[in-house]
Length: 215
Image (cartoon, rainbow, N blue to C red):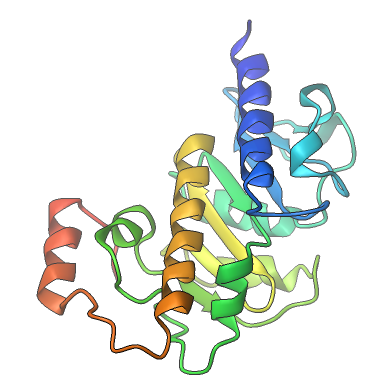
Protein backbone atom coordinates (compact mmCIF):
# COMPACT_ATOMS: atom_id res chain seq x y z
CA UNK A 1 0.00 0.00 0.00
CA UNK A 2 1.39 3.43 -0.96
CA UNK A 3 1.39 6.39 1.43
CA UNK A 4 -1.26 8.11 -0.68
CA UNK A 5 -3.51 5.04 -0.67
CA UNK A 6 -3.20 4.87 3.11
CA UNK A 7 -4.03 8.59 3.41
CA UNK A 8 -7.09 8.19 1.17
CA UNK A 9 -8.34 5.36 3.36
CA UNK A 10 -7.63 7.29 6.56
CA UNK A 11 -9.55 10.36 5.35
CA UNK A 12 -12.59 8.24 4.53
CA UNK A 13 -12.41 6.22 7.76
CA UNK A 14 -12.20 9.30 9.98
CA UNK A 15 -14.89 11.13 8.02
CA UNK A 16 -17.24 8.16 8.43
CA UNK A 17 -16.53 8.09 12.16
CA UNK A 18 -17.52 11.76 12.43
CA UNK A 19 -20.67 11.11 10.40
CA UNK A 20 -21.68 7.98 12.31
CA UNK A 21 -21.53 9.90 15.60
CA UNK A 22 -23.70 12.74 14.31
CA UNK A 23 -20.98 15.41 14.15
CA UNK A 24 -22.00 16.35 10.62
CA UNK A 25 -25.01 15.08 8.70
CA UNK A 26 -26.32 14.57 5.19
CA UNK A 27 -23.87 15.86 2.62
CA UNK A 28 -22.44 18.54 4.92
CA UNK A 29 -18.83 19.09 5.89
CA UNK A 30 -15.56 18.77 4.00
CA UNK A 31 -12.07 17.47 4.71
CA UNK A 32 -8.66 17.75 3.08
CA UNK A 33 -5.11 16.59 3.71
CA UNK A 34 -1.63 17.22 2.32
CA UNK A 35 0.03 14.51 0.26
CA UNK A 36 3.74 13.73 0.37
CA UNK A 37 4.34 15.57 -2.92
CA UNK A 38 2.78 18.81 -1.62
CA UNK A 39 -0.59 18.26 -3.24
CA UNK A 40 -3.98 17.82 -1.61
CA UNK A 41 -6.69 15.19 -1.27
CA UNK A 42 -10.11 16.79 -0.77
CA UNK A 43 -13.64 15.51 -0.26
CA UNK A 44 -15.75 16.13 -3.38
CA UNK A 45 -18.67 18.52 -3.48
CA UNK A 46 -22.08 17.20 -2.47
CA UNK A 47 -20.73 14.04 -0.82
CA UNK A 48 -21.58 12.54 2.55
CA UNK A 49 -18.89 11.95 5.16
CA UNK A 50 -20.55 8.58 5.71
CA UNK A 51 -19.98 7.41 2.15
CA UNK A 52 -16.74 8.88 0.83
CA UNK A 53 -14.99 6.78 -1.83
CA UNK A 54 -11.17 6.83 -1.47
CA UNK A 55 -10.73 6.55 -5.25
CA UNK A 56 -12.97 9.55 -5.98
CA UNK A 57 -11.40 12.11 -3.63
CA UNK A 58 -10.40 15.28 -5.48
CA UNK A 59 -6.65 15.28 -6.12
CA UNK A 60 -4.68 18.51 -6.49
CA UNK A 61 -1.02 18.79 -7.40
CA UNK A 62 1.49 20.99 -5.58
CA UNK A 63 0.61 23.92 -7.86
CA UNK A 64 -3.07 23.75 -6.88
CA UNK A 65 -4.33 22.18 -10.11
CA UNK A 66 -7.07 19.55 -10.01
CA UNK A 67 -5.50 16.46 -11.58
CA UNK A 68 -7.88 13.67 -10.58
CA UNK A 69 -11.03 12.58 -8.82
CA UNK A 70 -14.38 14.37 -8.61
CA UNK A 71 -15.11 18.09 -8.42
CA UNK A 72 -13.94 19.39 -5.01
CA UNK A 73 -15.97 21.01 -2.27
CA UNK A 74 -17.11 24.57 -2.90
CA UNK A 75 -15.30 25.51 0.33
CA UNK A 76 -11.84 25.17 -1.28
CA UNK A 77 -11.01 28.86 -0.62
CA UNK A 78 -11.43 28.13 3.10
CA UNK A 79 -9.07 25.15 2.98
CA UNK A 80 -6.53 26.94 0.79
CA UNK A 81 -6.45 29.89 3.20
CA UNK A 82 -5.32 27.66 6.07
CA UNK A 83 -2.67 25.88 3.99
CA UNK A 84 -1.33 29.15 2.61
CA UNK A 85 -1.08 30.90 5.99
CA UNK A 86 -0.13 28.07 8.36
CA UNK A 87 3.01 26.17 7.46
CA UNK A 88 2.14 23.49 10.03
CA UNK A 89 -1.23 22.68 8.44
CA UNK A 90 -1.32 19.12 7.15
CA UNK A 91 -5.10 18.75 7.13
CA UNK A 92 -8.27 20.84 7.41
CA UNK A 93 -11.71 19.71 8.59
CA UNK A 94 -15.00 21.61 8.41
CA UNK A 95 -18.18 20.30 10.04
CA UNK A 96 -21.78 21.42 10.54
CA UNK A 97 -21.70 20.39 14.20
CA UNK A 98 -24.87 21.13 16.17
CA UNK A 99 -23.62 22.45 19.51
CA UNK A 100 -20.87 24.68 18.16
CA UNK A 101 -23.33 26.21 15.70
CA UNK A 102 -25.79 26.76 18.54
CA UNK A 103 -23.08 28.40 20.67
CA UNK A 104 -22.17 30.72 17.76
CA UNK A 105 -25.70 32.15 17.89
CA UNK A 106 -25.69 32.90 21.62
CA UNK A 107 -25.50 36.53 22.80
CA UNK A 108 -22.38 37.56 24.65
CA UNK A 109 -19.99 35.09 23.02
CA UNK A 110 -16.47 36.53 22.73
CA UNK A 111 -15.61 36.65 19.00
CA UNK A 112 -11.88 36.60 19.74
CA UNK A 113 -12.09 33.64 22.12
CA UNK A 114 -15.17 31.67 21.09
CA UNK A 115 -14.93 28.84 23.60
CA UNK A 116 -15.20 29.44 27.35
CA UNK A 117 -12.30 28.01 29.42
CA UNK A 118 -14.11 24.94 30.72
CA UNK A 119 -11.45 22.25 30.36
CA UNK A 120 -7.71 22.25 29.65
CA UNK A 121 -8.18 20.11 26.54
CA UNK A 122 -9.81 22.69 24.30
CA UNK A 123 -6.97 25.08 25.16
CA UNK A 124 -4.35 22.40 24.45
CA UNK A 125 -5.80 21.26 21.13
CA UNK A 126 -7.20 24.50 19.74
CA UNK A 127 -5.72 27.59 21.36
CA UNK A 128 -8.07 30.53 20.93
CA UNK A 129 -10.89 29.95 18.44
CA UNK A 130 -11.91 32.97 16.36
CA UNK A 131 -15.62 33.49 15.73
CA UNK A 132 -16.05 34.79 12.19
CA UNK A 133 -19.24 36.48 10.96
CA UNK A 134 -21.86 34.77 8.82
CA UNK A 135 -20.98 34.21 5.17
CA UNK A 136 -23.02 32.63 2.39
CA UNK A 137 -21.82 29.01 1.99
CA UNK A 138 -19.08 28.85 -0.61
CA UNK A 139 -18.37 32.59 -0.43
CA UNK A 140 -14.63 33.15 -1.12
CA UNK A 141 -14.80 35.89 1.55
CA UNK A 142 -14.57 33.11 4.16
CA UNK A 143 -11.10 32.30 2.90
CA UNK A 144 -10.16 35.96 2.92
CA UNK A 145 -11.32 36.24 6.55
CA UNK A 146 -9.03 33.33 7.47
CA UNK A 147 -6.15 34.91 5.55
CA UNK A 148 -6.76 38.08 7.53
CA UNK A 149 -5.76 36.19 10.67
CA UNK A 150 -2.25 35.80 9.19
CA UNK A 151 -1.92 32.20 10.33
CA UNK A 152 -2.44 33.01 14.01
CA UNK A 153 -5.38 30.65 14.60
CA UNK A 154 -5.64 26.92 13.96
CA UNK A 155 -9.43 26.99 14.39
CA UNK A 156 -12.27 29.29 13.46
CA UNK A 157 -16.01 29.14 13.95
CA UNK A 158 -18.19 30.30 11.07
CA UNK A 159 -21.24 31.90 12.71
CA UNK A 160 -24.51 30.06 12.00
CA UNK A 161 -22.55 27.56 9.91
CA UNK A 162 -19.85 25.41 11.53
CA UNK A 163 -16.29 24.99 12.84
CA UNK A 164 -13.13 24.73 10.73
CA UNK A 165 -9.89 23.34 12.16
CA UNK A 166 -6.40 22.88 10.74
CA UNK A 167 -4.09 20.26 12.23
CA UNK A 168 -0.66 18.76 11.68
CA UNK A 169 -2.31 15.74 10.07
CA UNK A 170 -5.80 14.47 9.42
CA UNK A 171 -6.09 12.61 12.72
CA UNK A 172 -4.98 15.66 14.72
CA UNK A 173 -7.42 17.91 12.88
CA UNK A 174 -10.31 15.50 13.51
CA UNK A 175 -9.42 15.15 17.20
CA UNK A 176 -9.25 18.93 17.60
CA UNK A 177 -12.57 19.63 15.91
CA UNK A 178 -14.22 17.00 18.12
CA UNK A 179 -12.80 18.82 21.14
CA UNK A 180 -14.26 22.07 19.82
CA UNK A 181 -17.71 20.54 19.49
CA UNK A 182 -17.49 18.86 22.91
CA UNK A 183 -16.57 22.15 24.55
CA UNK A 184 -19.43 23.96 22.83
CA UNK A 185 -21.77 21.23 24.03
CA UNK A 186 -20.53 21.72 27.59
CA UNK A 187 -21.04 25.48 27.22
CA UNK A 188 -24.63 24.97 26.09
CA UNK A 189 -25.31 22.51 28.91
CA UNK A 190 -23.95 24.91 31.52
CA UNK A 191 -25.51 28.09 30.14
CA UNK A 192 -27.54 29.81 32.83
CA UNK A 193 -25.64 28.11 35.66
CA UNK A 194 -22.90 29.67 37.74
CA UNK A 195 -20.34 27.31 36.22
CA UNK A 196 -16.79 27.25 37.62
CA UNK A 197 -14.43 28.05 34.74
CA UNK A 198 -10.65 27.67 34.70
CA UNK A 199 -8.96 30.63 36.33
CA UNK A 200 -6.55 32.88 34.40
CA UNK A 201 -3.71 31.27 36.34
CA UNK A 202 -4.86 27.76 35.42
CA UNK A 203 -5.21 28.78 31.77
CA UNK A 204 -1.69 30.21 31.72
CA UNK A 205 -0.29 27.03 33.26
CA UNK A 206 -1.84 24.95 30.44
CA UNK A 207 -0.50 27.38 27.81
CA UNK A 208 3.02 27.22 29.26
CA UNK A 209 3.08 23.49 29.97
CA UNK A 210 1.87 22.44 26.52
CA UNK A 211 3.40 25.29 24.47
CA UNK A 212 0.01 26.47 23.20
CA UNK A 213 -0.33 29.18 20.56
CA UNK A 214 -2.18 31.92 22.43
CA UNK A 215 -2.34 35.52 21.26
